[in-house]
Length: 538
Image (cartoon, rainbow, N blue to C red; front, top):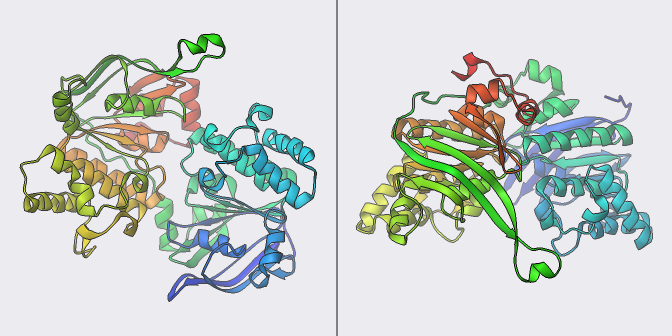
């Protein structure tokens, strides 16, 4: 950490409110030049609002207090003055690059626009500098990628493009809002290493907003912990992690996935696949492409078996083929090879309806997968309309209420629960709704597609514990799709590791996570900073 007599950023008694509600309450902290400060807390703690309010990016908010940056109070500056600071002296990396980047312009144009506006370079000079910036952030084939649109890049590449844009004018302070959320552990480690390298090279200060404590431990010099709008604890990272004073901080540090599964699963085979493969058609360049398509093999032939009460974890980075494999299992895309669910292959519509009832899915993002126009009663009860048409309205309502109680949602805590809409719930509560929707028709197999990747550590722990309890109670089989080695270690009985569509390692969770053989698996475990032992797993 580089010491500074006067902090680069000094925030005093920052208070932010909307109407009668105050969401940030008298927060004070500072960031020295060249320092990395992590602002930590659960969703709703006020950490993102704190960062956005410094640059005047929170609309219709009541903001008071002081935020001194190089002798000027940011909270007192005009919009014109703030516009001169944004991107120049203070830059920001937003949480979701797909939402922050303009889908109508390629990456190079968006980076060059910042350079032209802030540095006054010509369009040609800005374009060349954009390529250099992309290359400096580790984007392969930067000359080609500079012409790519956001949807043509992977999550890690989009995040690197956002970093290149933020660093275009060599800012003195970088505000990074959850820069690695929902990224694969390998990509997360790369982004973290990249930010640390760039910070050392440029000497800029970094204010990192995150709920990822592993990231904080590896990246930050100091930590500031927020709870419900209050700053409850701050100090040196090593000191706080070793001897946290506040109960809330200790709870955050203790919120890691715990393994509480039944190690004995049933003998009944619910899912059986032999030489299962997934191919996608791709265009062929030249005249040949007029007459036929090429083939991209997303999943090379794999064998898998899933028994009653068992969890099979499929782990791998983006592009490894794990989601394509899950979609094939669900019968949503064509596949090659043999696949049987409860002894039936996907085929006729009549048989598929019976099979569909036995296999349900919980998606990664419950906000996107739950219809905003439907009430809780309609969302959870929709499956009963299809698979239990003989039930009347009162019977459907009774079953919906029962399954909601099973996932921890009841009228006592949420008055008028059945008539509420998804936006009225937190991320963890929406995921519970998604689980209830899948459970209401009493399936045998649940496909869990990254069920906790976007959740806070405490909420993640709660959802995983819920899934473990439901598995014990109903002997459910889980096909768990994830990039998180910690989640796999907490939930899975067996693990399959995919890379570029190929199975590189397969075995029990103790074998794969505790003593990986393949170099790729070793890297996954190392990037997750796992410390496994037989005693911890069993």
